[in-house]
Each structure stands twice: as C-alpha cells, then as structure tokens.
Image (cartoon, rainbow, N blue to C red):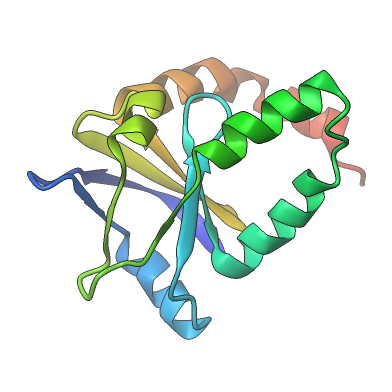
Length: 145
C-alpha cells in the first residue's frame, strides 16, 4: 500500500507533510486517521487506523505477566498518538516522538507496505549505510523460493 522513500522537512510550526503518493493512497483507501508511535531502530511507525487496530490486537495478546511484554507495550502504546492530516496533508508530531527519533528538521519518510516509517535524515542514512551490504544475505535467510 505505502511504498517508496521521500525526503521532507518539518516546517516552522512543527508539521510534517506526507508525500503526495501517500496522500493519494490514503484518499483512495478512505484513510482519514493515522496512529504514530515509537518504532524500532530509532524511527517512528505510522499506521492507518485499520492497521493500527490489527497491530494493537496482536500486541494486546502479549501476556502482561512477562516482563518483556509489559516493557514493550508500555513504551509502544504510551508513545502513540492519533493524527488526522489537514487539507494539505500535514500532520503535527509531538516533541517527545521527534526527540525519540532524533528528528530536528530534515526527515525521510519510507513506505513499508502496511506502515510508514518516519526517520531523521541522518538516522535513515546511517541505517541504510549499515544495512545495504547485508541486504542479499538477509534475503537468502528470510525469503523462501
């Protein structure tokens, strides 16, 4: 559903504009609301409301009697915020989420099929530089022919 890599900036009012292709996908799929939360690898995860509910059901099933389950759910859900893009496709990211991801002004927005990831430009560059060499090896381990 969401694909590609886009470079954007946070404006003076702290808003981030979603890529035009993502706005088009949202419009065509009747997506009005998104949820943004702390992701993995120092990025933010952004889900459509429908996908958020699916993810929420999976994570709610993690036993709260397990320390790792409590820790993950506390950090993941306490960071969550619902956002509704304005008419220009802009969303406001809370400061605590920007701080978590190290976002200052320049961001990279990445479509990962069922979610959007929001990275600081520097964070994405570092991740990509450190990961691209192992891409083929990872594919061999994960993808069945």
